[in-house]
Image (tube, rainbow, N blue to C red; front, side, top):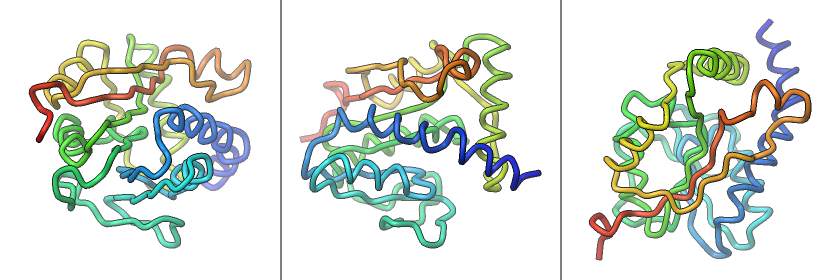
Length: 207
């Protein structure tokens, strides 16, 4: 069953979804920048970003490094990033924070190692029904790969507290990502996903 779900998700959803995410992220990156992909998984998103952005230098970190990833991947304990302050121009977290045991700590680390910005793509909980839909999507996307899902999604107020606690402010927010084809998007997209470009607040900017 897992293999069937994996095949269906890969053939019908994954390629379109990851391409749409790469398009949305790419508008916020600059040629020649150093990008840290936190929770990079297979590395396919990083490869797409490298194809779209000239001279983009990408490093990945993962708690469980996969064999044969097409980018450099460093093992990460899920708490402290193994890099000095300001090592990268931008850090990227795509559907990572709702898996984290301490999302604030993970995001704070992303800010610490980033000189310019942090980019987050994640989910938004808006009531009991959205939690059910998001949980189903997580199960379909992660169970075949053996990835544990916490099924813990944040609402608008919780996101505001997490971002403030990490010393970050929203510069650009996009909820129209075009991840799924019609009519699938009527159920699985709606306002359940967002991508945000975040910058350090004035108080947290390091000299």
